[in-house]
Image (cartoon, rainbow, N blue to C red):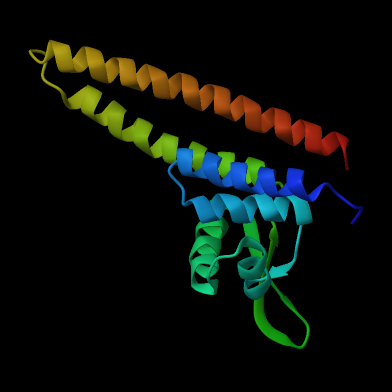
Length: 157
């Protein structure tokens, strides 16, 4: 890897932690993602703990969060029993796909309530209909973003 500006890299990793925290994720998860975006991996739990100055237990817990989001993946090295982590292929699209799936499930629940509400609940029906329209638009636009990312990825292969 070429020489980088350590201060810029450290600041980026810290900002990724703050961004993740702002999105409801653990700050360490964001810092781990930032580290792997810059360095790629694979990186062991011990290496991540050392580089991010956190405990191995924290790295392990947050690695599971990032694996479940599809941002990173666990891998191994021949002859080595410890787990390693690296940035997953198309991690940003995978994160969006997970978000899209959660939005679809929420949209189903909202639409079910919209259909089941009695007519005399006009205020609630208005708010639920507004929420369903929001999810319709969010789903449509997120699907378009994923399609554009897939097309762009196809151009770079």
